[in-house]
Length: 411
Image (tube, rainbow, N blue to C red; front, side, top):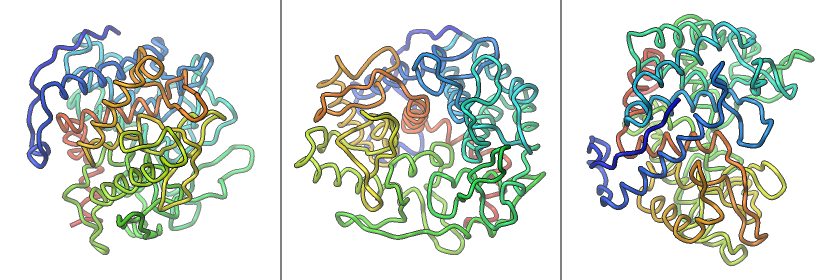
């Protein structure tokens, strides 16, 4: 697959951008470059024979099902921008969807978290993952909508329709996190606010095996406050939990029928609290500051960690992932953009490479990740595109499952 050099144009101003002050041309150029460079991950770290995409750039890394969902979305973005040779993105999308329909093992339509890059078989004895399957399906449905009326749409619908969402509830009112063939369902459930809103939305919106709409209200919504910012929070405090579902679902005009909660403004508050936590933490950690924030799950000096801020558990050691700010750009464009430009201007030689920003860094330990993490590359590309054109939101909100779910749970 060939990715063409970007052409810098004045980006289309859509309804979302009318709510905020448009970026200056130099900012547009910077964000376009970042998105273009980051998108290269999904071409460079894939198997051209079956379309599978690596979990990380580390040699020997397996495929991540969630990363493939982000990759399907990124391919369509590249096509819309004219960065991929005409027809190549569509061919790759069809190849990926055909592989998942015909080759990748599944149970009741759910996929294993990690797959062998060559054979597509289960890797690392990983679990059958409900959330990773949902993120894959979100990308598949978006790609189907983007290439509407084609084989891509047909394949995406076939894969989605065979998922038995009720099975993953295991007789309860909420969704289980996963299942292993060795001993069955995991003892963990999506029972509190988290990244799982996309999972519940797709499960409720199914025409073939839906779960009850009431399940949307079965998970708890803990309230907390930090630095004057009150929000429904995830216990980990990781900022990705406020981003992943909203990479696809445009919550800006959606208010829950029962509670009246708007999850877009909730994420705005979460982003502001996360930044304030890092500003306060700069007294302890050199890495943190007003332009270096966004505590999220990422690769750290001692491996992958679920870093987070208050309210929440707030596990942290001075490690920052640029994707935390990039994925927050739709919630606070000014502070996210300022932070990304700061990292680029001050740490480019260590932190920026062929796929854009590397996964994370820690000034206090003089540690710089040499890896790129697929999910962090994905949230960067998708949220930058949502900020600049709204493409992913626009198409995904037109899909049948999401329309059904909105009609049942929102006003």
